[in-house]
Image (cartoon, rainbow, N blue to C red; front, side, top):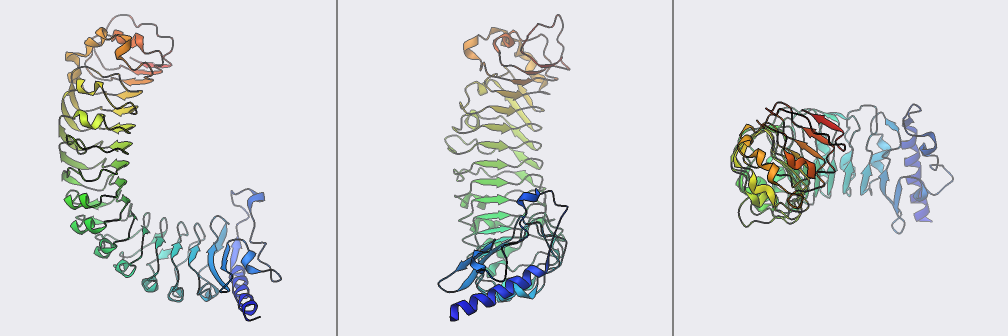
Length: 424
């Protein structure tokens, strides 16, 4: 009887909460998929209501998931903070905009807080700092402003922190974040961060994914990243980095790395002789100032599928790339200073704007069918100073796109029936 009375009290609180919601009739979600929380009725058991999870033994509501319901929230109703046993709260994409209120301090058992795309405005509520049980925080894609508070050392169990896509004022990466030993996912994309990436980021020994894209850091990546031996995703695209890149020889669990659109210098990382990255599928180092030769080690990584090295200052012979990993299909080497024989071992190859290829590019005519990847579908050699149409193209039956403009090729254009788009 006591348990039933407690659940009844919780149902009353939830119904008060529902009355504070409105539902968008103009939503793009199909009408048949909208529920408008019709299961939330006074005469029914709230543990069976849509989006509600319960611990029936203890008689507690432990989960509230209203994501994707087209709910419009005009602020956090006090009834929400009466659900003091909540462990999971997901209000992703609730709208219209509102400012987070105080009251979170009552949700002391909360482990997951998801308020992504809720159009929250103002500062991050200080009351969040009291929720020491939190394991996941996602406040991304809102309108949060002010400085990023250094409260995160208060969450010793935190595994996921996603704050990207807000309007925070310029600030440095909060050092408290770098003390979170259990953190596995850190996403701080487009947060107006500046200053150096702290060396203490190497303390995040459990980290799997790191996204620092679109910030305004100075300096290069710290060597301490090599301490993140569980890291699988490293994304620092367009975040103001400069200077040489650490060798990253300890990050052998990497699956994806993008350091594109920075001003990084020195040799290409991830090509240290003898280092194998067995799960690495995509590398993007484009639009930097990297230089030197590109070692064959990078092309022979066993799982590599996509490699983007365009718009750098790489030089040296390109012929070393003729025996790549069997999985490597898409390669962009354009806008470098590479020379030698054009490789045709990939399904898609862009090597445009490498004018030094002209010295041996015509040797393509000496290739035979067995030495060329017959499945190549895209080949771009724009502005490579070629002097004639490479005869080896006859051995490419799957070729659909051929780009040879701004070269010095003369004579008759061959008739290759399979090519759908040819630019000469």
